[in-house]
Image (cartoon, rainbow, N blue to C red; front, side, top):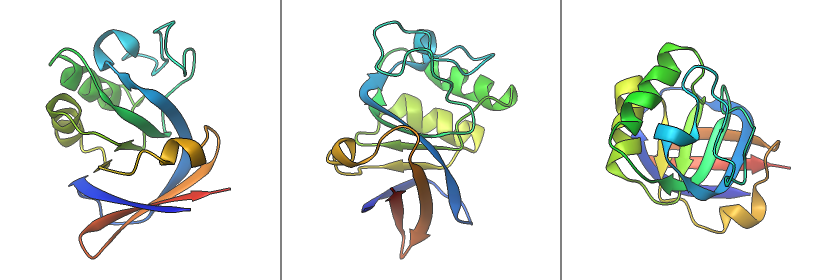
Length: 137
């Protein structure tokens, strides 16, 4: 299944990896341990999972502006996701992705949550200024 979105932070190759999917918003300050990449919010639908090297598909960000620094810390600690894919963008996640050089896609349709599951293979590329997100079952 293929979804199209907006390129937030451009990249120059095909990105492939394992999906980690959350139907909820994520606050990087508090929900994610910047030293390990583990989701520590017990109310999260991905509690205990590690976002490191995953293609993180989620509704969008919530919370503190310090979340951008947490995203940067994840990158510096080599615990960042391979890419961020969101339904709704927000300034905190966008700035964190840009500061950290993490590829980001925004505006994918919400129906992704009915298709993509954690553990699925995902492939991203840019085609005619649009981001293409392919979920491979």
